[in-house]
Image (cartoon, rainbow, N blue to C red):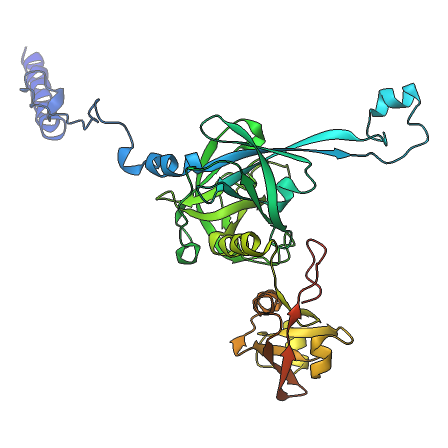
Length: 388
């Protein structure tokens, strides 16, 4: 009997010990422990009457700019290359009309921006190049014919005129005040689907050496730009025009987040010259230049790569008559520093024909100055920047 009582006492002692340990470590396991009141769950919910994203919406900017962006449709006749098998029905079955020398209608589409209420429209030169018929579709549903006032292939800009007034003209912004990271909207008619707005930021400024135009100073953006957007508006967060969408970098033909727009400051300057004079007049001194590489700068004993190497001088041209020679390094134009060949191209183009320009060059470790009489820049093949 005493043996059983001892076992019972030991069991009770162990059980009490276990209860003490559990009450200290996991009191919630004890059923008779009073439940602790749970914390109140707080949820923040948007009021159903408040539109989501109101504070971050660009609807007002789009509303401000969309009426001033138009769709442009062009048609022209093209001829295919002559082929002796053109009239062979079997050949035509497999290859179609690609080699048919007879003229055929080709349609193209793009976008444009109403620059003034009396019917002037800015667009890209490549949108209307060679067009025999141009139709402009306005935001209010009207479609009206347009005429080309003038074009500037070297900046890929063109000005159209339609017979209409009291149009919703775009508000011109300040592209020079843009910063990398600023919000921008691209508005146009991609792939002909209709008016479309895309959002992005300014990815870079002053893009040059792309081989797109002769004169380049592009705004780069990741706002989606696709075929059909060309000539459309790039606007800031307030809906003001800051650029004319012009080109994309793509391996597929569609947007890959690298688009380029012509700054509105340049577009405005070109447009005003075209409307006033019918064309754009630029300065020219007859030199061929290239960028200075570190190796070239070292060979000419220059402290840096600023400037442009004169690789050729047109015989009998303004620079040749003034005494400029191949191998000179052009450092300044009228006191303005030459950064590279692209900046030099813009500096010379800004000169007025008939005026004297002072060119500062480095020649055999000597700094020399030449007074050059500026002439009018002759027409250049598009996408070349050989002769300045």
